[in-house]
Image (cartoon, rainbow over all chains, first blue to last red; front, side, top):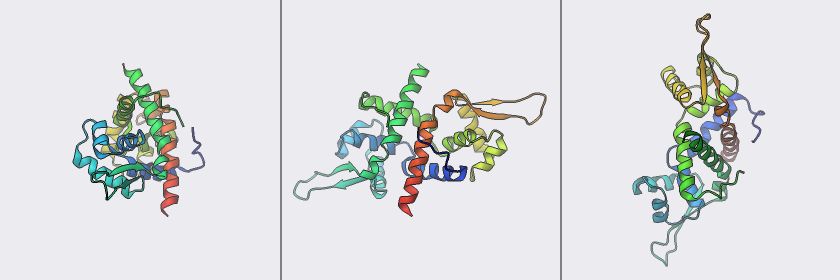
Length: 112
Length: 112
């Protein structure tokens, strides 16, 4: 566990808010995780997350791109060759994402 | 970083969803963190989180209690002696919370 005792309560609260502002909500983390898992095309990402519609995915991808967490690249010679990749900055979310996964797996075991 | 490669994409997605279902939203994590930081009374928690109103805090505390993350205890001999404490289960969120704080602190440095 990372030590955060050097930060006072206000700093901790601000930091939590900043993080949740960027990756909070229902879809950001599932989308980033899907891209990390090798889904690079819009359709691949869409299929990998049941319940997520095109419009929402489109808007979330734009948000993640604006925040520098993913890149969108296209090849003008190949139509529909747009693909998404996480940036080095997006990769810094890996620790958070794996903590969320581990906690969720344990929680599910506890419930059932 | 915790290794989650043993889980396939569907398991990861479910786990992320389960976790976000319990601690997603704007207030859960700030409230749990406030309680971890030693705020035990309703008023203390309320004051520690600017922007959070009574009604919302009340409803969030109930949700956290139902999910077994905090306990609410009262002393019938002392009026208004209700206090909240995290459970051992709530304490398992510490890793996630510290990751969120560390990421937020770094993100803020990056932006400014």
